[in-house]
Length: 305
View 1 (cartoon, rainbow, N blue to C red):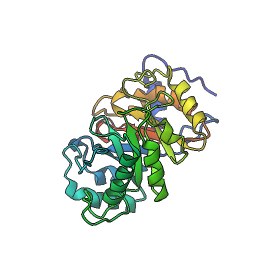
View 2 (view 1 turned 30 degrees about the horizontal axis):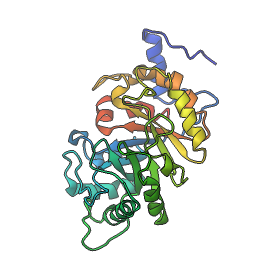
View 3 (view 1 turned 60 degrees about the vertical axis):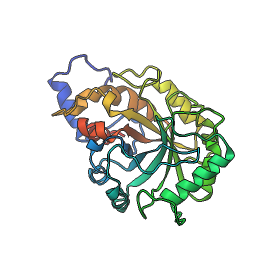
View 4 (view 1 turned 135 degrees about the vertical axis):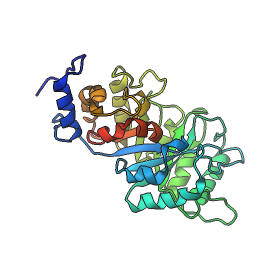
């Protein structure tokens, strides 16, 4: 097997290799497990284009609408999607689903307008999610996406503490057959959602290896990334685990032309061969559609995922 060490300067030979990689003709290491599953977060910037447009790229197998960010204290999110017009989102959800693309709604995010301080609040939020975004149709409950129903709920919890009642929320949703995923920070365990994940009700975990955490994958450094990845896959062996990456931290310039793979050589040569050894490796999650659209990141990564 050829060496995976990369030269510091990109020459013509590396460009040729990158072209082969993008074409999908280069075989990965024998131990790697590729799924070609790519998940993207959508809804954080009106300039990212519509949900329908994201689904029609053919890049994504799952799109996560973000975020249901007001809940737990008697008020509920009513559909603020960073400037996107709500009127067409319901039809776009149905369009994506008709193409076999899973559409989820993520709860939480970086704001401070949500919490689950009690069992009652968990019950109330589960009830609102069911009737406003899922299969319920209780009269008088506002449905931002009309009669469209998302395919499940993702937990992206950045605020609150370990005592919050997300485990109870998960159980209540699961009783109704709702599919559950989570997108925790990369440090394992993430105390905000660990009790919920320990229920065993989550089919997927998208671990966020981006942002300000020490285990983030930035500038090609895998320091701390593989170690935390191995903890996640070992802690939840029956759950598919996705490698969460940020297009904005990939090193690919906005509007990059030509062979983008040359910017992602560390991902291909160093990180993916390690994470894909896990039996429960599920794929790659990309944050977010806006940056992905500018960089063309998923267009390359999909062939390696």
